[in-house]
Length: 544
Image (tube, helix red, strand yellow):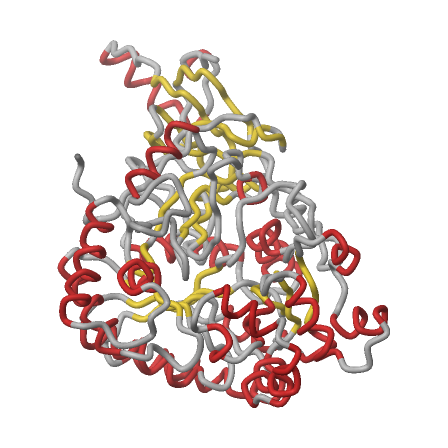
């Protein structure tokens, strides 16, 4: 589409411009854009108030912002009444785009970049023999060959590195093993892994000096440490203290994944944890965090069970579950009791996904309901029996948090929004947590527009420039000329999540346009099938 010289339809605001043309005889050549978003309200991601502007995009980059009257564009989109924002960056996901390139649950709510990596990461896999690649290079090459709709970053997991070197051996690393772990970390960073993430079952790492040594390597590569706090309950203080020690001793940014407290009897501790993180920041430690906007969490039912059952690997865990002689020992174990209470007890623990056909009838139900349906008086027997029948692997949803705490954490200026979910579609198995489909739009619609917990500008900041800052990502997260054209266009009046815990599989509303690297992936609310996404390589990447 071409717009004519604006002097053919003079307006008062253009008189000086037209006069200059008459005096100096200049002709103005039209700017060329691939996509031009016109008449929108720009929320640029910085937290500043919105402003009216057109946004011109060429070759995957934002090339012009302002009143663009003279142009030649392949596609012009009138976004009157809509918000033009940077594409949302999800700092904590379990996304795997191999076999699911369209990433619809995320793209349709404006997410243009997912960050993978926690617990078990896609690499290194040397000697594990469970995937047809060993390295990040092998995985990333497969993504690019297949094509993906959104951008992706992957951290490398400290636990994955340790598993490659030591398997399920829980003894301290020898000096030689420590050197192997450092070498694997450096290799992963050179292959494009962004930073390192840790996940500990409870109370921090069993061998802190190992993690500190690896964290100091991150400083050499100018990258970041992400801490998945395994205990969001009784042992959280120890894990926070360790995260602070990494920031202090390694001298690097530390980002805490899904800050929260589970377990009703300790909900009151959240304000103190918030004060501690703020105090650490005031002392000069670069600590940030993220959260998801729900009072329920999701992970495996295995987290209810004591460490002695799980630390020797999944096969031994399954053997313990199937040993009837251990039933009473498990039920009376203090860890089993404490962690079951943390997870919401039998009324709050729900089944999300199983593999055995005879158990699929229970998907979406609370454990107390399943026990009643099976005629079992003690739900503890139910959870052990079901876990035994599933080989120790059941995905769950746990209703165990406080809405008051969700709101308190959300208002902290150093807290980003992140889903802890996945890029999936409507055919996802089981009854997954609704956060994979609705995290970002729930914040924009429910918490910002309807409840006023955040301003719309701050909500966007927490999904864009703040996560970019936590990563050290410099070319995204803001609407700025010269930055990548990852853009979410949403209706501030209608943007919302459309799902519930009971019926989680439905897409976001009110996000009619999404661009990834300058290409429309959502157009008038429909996925175009475009695959313009790419892997974003970390700061330590060395091109082969």
